[in-house]
Length: 164
Image 1 (tube, one colour):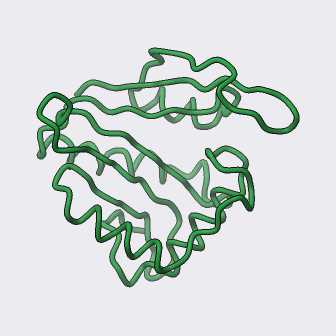
Image 2 (tube, one colour):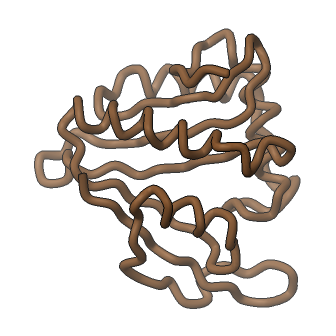
Image 3 (cartoon, helix red, strand yellow):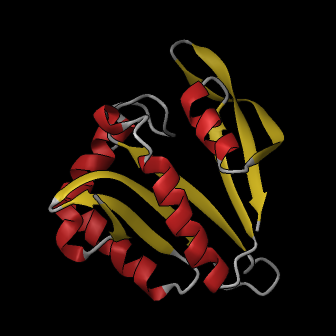
């Protein structure tokens, strides 16, 4: 398995991976609420390529994608040192070190591009993700109380960051 930048020819497999991960119940969208398409993924990859403070990484075995990590920065002078992270791993591939490898490659990119602050948010009851983020050096810096509503109840969202 290799960690590499997502390519336009990955669009079909990437859309399928996004849809699978979003159906996990741990992402912002409810299962089935948004369906990514290959055209949407291709457009997103084009936007990422234009932003030198962003990268779209995938964990791949040939054409099979096991996970992704999207690092989104911006060009504003005051916040150009910060970037937001979205990560997703195929359910059958979780717990196999793929997340660690994606984070390690992303951090290399961040350091080379002057990104000092990494940010992400996570549903408070997502213990496996919280464990990964702690392992990678992220610290909780806030709580968005009852920011999400699903399964008939409100849920907190933790805000985490890491300084490089």
